[in-house]
Length: 279
Image (cartoon, rainbow, N blue to C red; front, side):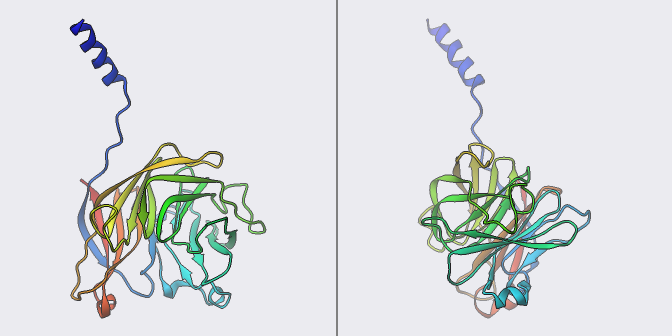
């Protein structure tokens, strides 16, 4: 009986799917981040080939958007077919906006009306690898991520219609002040958190990994398992409060980039985009 039981246990162990393992990320370099034009977010752009990185900051907001009240831009993302999306918010109201540039250069705006309990802020977007779904996050302490059809890519979207939330990612534990997320695989997100308290994961300003139970879709909610991977670098000639900003995973090189703005007047001199590779 003991032999039979051991054989059964062995069969079960080898037939069971392996648990998702958290990645480790090693710092390999850095680049200065301009506080006006590179202070909010960044994304790698695959199409057209050899496109430069796209950054957002207070200095990248077009004047006409400012005049209409869209005075904050978050962490952008680009789909694998070349669509580029920036998230915008106002100081008040019941809407948030996603500004989309098509591969041919044309811009369009997609407005989303807030749902019950939805926060006004619009910190980041992350486009699923299949291009059809866009995740977006709310600032503060949250236990969910919002899922939308990707504006300009998903055929069910139009600039003349409200952009609906179609499903939700329910996190297994709360996160705080997430400033950016990006897909590193079909069901894996890497996220930068500006959490100043450290009570949720035992460290402040963590790099987070979110493993989804399934690929995002427009019909059913999915769950997300959150793991803190490491504290992001906090180095400056000034002391005070750092601000972690946007994140990008470049699948062409496997490089992860995260913006960290320095405290005080050093925000002008030694704010940094850090580069990491998977260890």
